[in-house]
Amino acid sequence: MFQIQQARRGSTLLLILSVLNDGPLHGYAIMRELEARSEGYFSMTAALLYPTLHQMEKDNLVEGTWEGDQGKRRKKIYSITPRGKEQLAKASSEWKHFFDRLFGVINPPDQIRRTQ
Image (tube, rainbow, N blue to C red; front, side):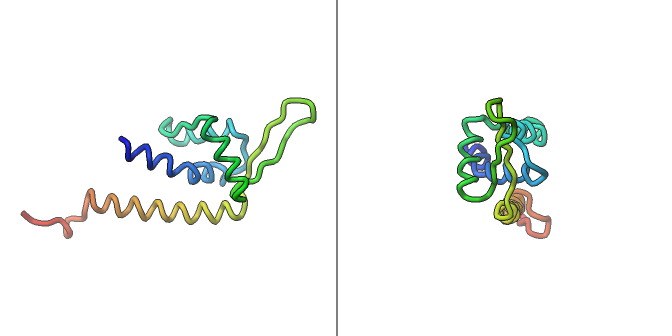
């Protein structure tokens, strides 16, 4: 299970960018959307999400804008940037390649299987 947890942590940026690729959301909505899309498999805590979003802002992968009236409860809405879209495409391709190779080893086509 340790390897699965490492892969899940390594996919955090890809997951967040994937959710934001469909439109801007605030942090709590990102967590709920991720959980809904994965049927509960990926659940992210605020302690993981918000520091990651702040770093993604610094890296220009997402942009945060405040919504709501001054002096009232405001929400920071996150949007994917053009650089974030590039990163999403690159990361998606890399993960797909990785899993294609992984499953090719686990379940090789019949013509590749060794005969014993």
